[in-house]
Image (cartoon, rainbow, N blue to C red; front, top):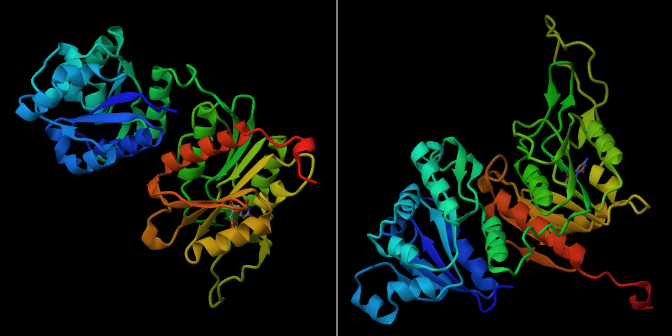
Length: 414
Ligand code: C5P
């Protein structure tokens, strides 16, 4: 999509610089030529060697390097690009841009360029909210500098709030729009309805106790948000979680598996169903109407269990209301692919996102996920990445699935 396009990527110092390595990879995958400039502090977070290896080109760092200037001066560097992307854009570099300072290669190239500039700010929430930064960002916006993010969430410094660098797919989409290869707001899932399940279920034992699991809902909520960003109308049926509901998504809070199934069926018809919830397999057959009490000399109560309905399998059943694409998740602690492909067949869904949730993987409750995408005839191993990125990629794959022309009756082989 970006074949023949030239991007000058300026990486400034910030923990989010690691995401820029993935950005380079995605830009290269799409055929863009990428030249990279690192500020001095950026080299504390990513090495020039890894940036050079991924961009398949020399990395530029010094304003006063005789070899750099002879080969490619800072003026040419800044002009021979279709777009200049600053990711991460630190508070310091944003301030220098706003003031027109030019005391290193990055700031000089930014002052010398005559090309559109896109910044992806990344910093601590207080630094972002500081009137100085906000004033600088407003000054840049008034000068026509484009911006993507920052988003809100848990920051690398441990604080929570706005300041997270936009995720790579968001930056890629912004680049696509600025370069003109994507329409101003690409919404490939506009007009599609999606149901997403997320979080754990709570199955009551008595009015104060319940059976639950460690699901945080992060992955399911991120999928709902990503589908919404691509234009889908999303109903998120969520078990009890502490996450805020994603913007623009209809949320149906539930507690038990039975309620989750009922809410999903009520949300039909839909084009897409993504079952990311960790639904309890069993519920208590006869939950106590009152709190179970310890009795003198009495033993513990016996809890009988009944199987819960399988929401994914129910939504996958053939019929008029079956969503055109049903995606399940398989959380496994061993024999990941074996169990996941068996699950694909057993549940009757179209795709399975398989993830390793063994305690060593840190997936449950964590921010990272390493998944495989299984379809009836393919298995793709995705690199370890943030749950938001997994969600973005999955949403992109879903959009691509719906964009593909489906065979008409006459094209279906006899
Ligand atoms: O059978 P297992 O729980 O491993 O299957 C996981 C997949 O099935 C997930 O997509 C999960 O959301 C879904 N599921 C469901 N209803 C259940 C159990 C699992 O929708 N009762």
